[in-house]
Amino acid sequence: MGRFERLFELLPDNVESVLITSDINRRYFTGMKSSAGTVLAFRNKAYLLIDFRYIEKARETVKTAEVIETKELYKEISALLRQEGVKNLAIEAMDVTVSRLNVMKKHLKCVDIIETDVLSNSINKLRMIKDEEEMEYIRKAQEIAESAFDDILGFIKEGVTEREIALELDRLMLEKGAEGISFDTIALAGENTSMPHGVPTDKKVKKGEFVLMDFGAVYNGYHSDMTRTVCVGTPDEEMEKIYNIVLTAQEKAIAAAKAGISGKELDGIARRHICDAGYGEYFGHSLGHGVGLKIHEQPNAAPSYEKNLEKGTVITIEPGIYIAGKFGVRIEDFVILTENGCINLTKSAKNIISL
Image 1 (tube, helix red, strand yellow):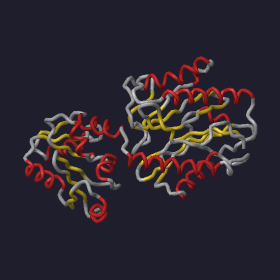
Image 2 (image 1 turned 60 degrees about the vertical axis):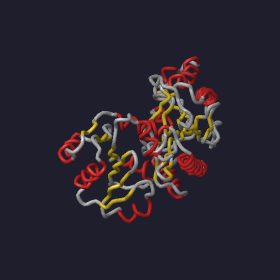
Image 3 (image 1 turned 180 degrees about the horizontal axis):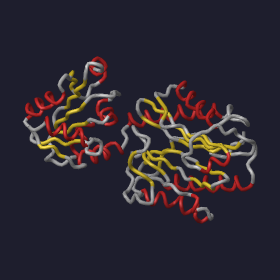
Image 4 (image 1 turned 45 degrees about the vertical axis):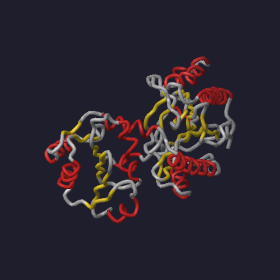
């Protein structure tokens, strides 16, 4: 069953047509990356309306929808709506701006526009469960990131800066076949590692410091995400203690991860271990999030996420402890949930690496 068919199965029966305008969701349904284009789908047919800049690529690439070169978008959408005889049109309420909604209302008077989140929610639910093709792209993205990590270990040494490490990681991922990077690469050293989403600076790495790297590659639109914390030289006793608390918390969560567990429960497994060790106040973010065409997407492993996680969900498991003025440790893998457990897509070693 195709993605459009699965979408309409999730939508209420009274929704007759949908308009998909966001870049990410357009790519999800058509397989084509572009900065423009509109998808109009009915229960029995779908169209991609796109302008001259992309028309040749679209005709070669898109197999799930009929491609139409557009010159007057809303006039052409109106004609198709009338042709199909539909009475309503659902839009991506989570993505459409007020300005764009006003334009739609002005030009699409032949239908009632459904402004609720019904379409956005249905697409998000559909995208949560990855099919085999999506999983293969995610695996490939992760392989690229891990290969870059293997190489960066030979680059990190006393005297290099955080910014140089981040730039080299980016270069390595692109060199190894990444379409892009998943997000602005985080590379932090020493006391800066206590900032979970710190920005790389010109700070130079010193001997005996942790270096924390959070990064990912994009392959055919799909993201990977991993974090490793390594030490330049030998970690002291406190650093080693904190590292092992984080590692055990992560291992416990991975062992418990499976379809049917709630995001809150999964988060709680790692959080309890860190709290019991006396560092609960230093773990201030959630355990993990979904990954796919976006680096952060549903579902979540968080104290507030009470829904059960489903089979085929890809989610990060990334506990951390961050002590301001000293250092921080985060270890992040991401996994595919199965009925009886999970498949860990992250193969890089997690023992303390001393460089």
